[in-house]
Length: 258
Length: 258
DNA sequence: TCCATTATTGCACGTTTATGCCTGTTGATG
DNA sequence: CATCAACAGGCATAAACGTGCAATAATGGA
Image (cartoon, rainbow over all chains, first blue to last red; front, side, top):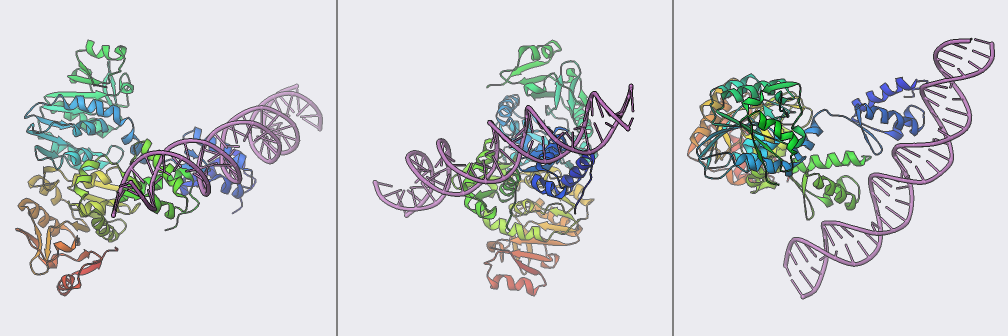
């Protein structure tokens, strides 16, 4: 399959197509196929990668799978920092409470730290969190079902919302994508945001935790105003400058242990 | 399965995939499979472990998934035998099907082996199984909610049954506690048995897998007669004496690979 | 048409990366 | 405590890499 006389731009499109179709390409192969030097191919791949259209790796390039890798990596990212936040979140739970644990990896860390023999009832829509608590004899676990969104890793949507509507948790551990002292809590997914909104509305008390980079950020879908959050857990090294505005808006800010 | 001409980055994701699917891998095995030296494999495993994507152990690596604790504990027993059964179960799945995966550790093993890019819809009431499939982009996952029984580790009861009632799976991977050629399938929990009964009734086809010690055993709660089961997977070393009666009753008996 | 400007390409250079082998060390096991 | 496999680190090699540069082709105004 000899393709010749292609202009550079045209070749880029052809290369991107091949990347998408094969999932992976070798620079050396493309050089032969397009009858040009590897340098030119490398330049094209570099440009595509700069535009975020493929992932450059040693020897060639890989197709970018929107979330699959992102999720897998995100799960592992900053797990130590999230564990610290999770411990502080779990600390807010008191005996006999009905706690709703929203999805997310920070809350997953919190679920691991849920105190023993507190006669708790816990509800969640995140299968990973449920799996952690599923065999705990000291916890009454309510699993919220529905269709699971891959990039969230938890169930949202009408069915999940319907099931959740019958619950009135004492405490909500809210997962968040961004928390801005002016505009409040933000999410990256519309259905997720809607689900979280219902959670907040139906819960007696809402607490959340945020990595430093999530403070003072926002996103495409708003969940709730700052006032809906009673307590915010921040990292031990959170800059005072970032936490102060929350205190000013009436949020109780707690610092996790290092 | 010889995989050659893989770029380093590609091999890493392939290795991670294997780790996740098998739960554990040996460096020596991977070296043969990927046709490279053990040094290279070790380097790759070390990097994955540094990123927190797997756990490095002497001789290879272990999977570290969100639900790892729960899975690890439940998996401890006969994990390798169940993995063999799980692979055979996953083999029965065909493209585009709607599969219900019942709870249990054998089915958990099957969930790990569910083929890629089969455009499957999968439903389950087991959070550990859901956690395995939650981030799969190629699988539409329906999570059945309800109260989770600790000793089952999955949701059963009225709410779960209600949600399941609206589903008509093409294929049911039924978990079981005992399977007797005369009396059929048995469970150790009344609600679990009731749930399974509904599952069997609503599914077009029902298959199951049993460790040797589960054949020719019974329990307190009957799920369904032998005739409800189309296919039974048994271990490679299952005694002919134990499997024969099933064949006589019209069950297709398949043997898993060692 | 001619010339200036620009973009694209291939090449040469030094640098980085991946890999296999070697060596001494550590861990598992009897 | 002895043995052996698995291991980490160092080293050498070859391939892949980025960059600067010059040659060439394409473009566009005068």
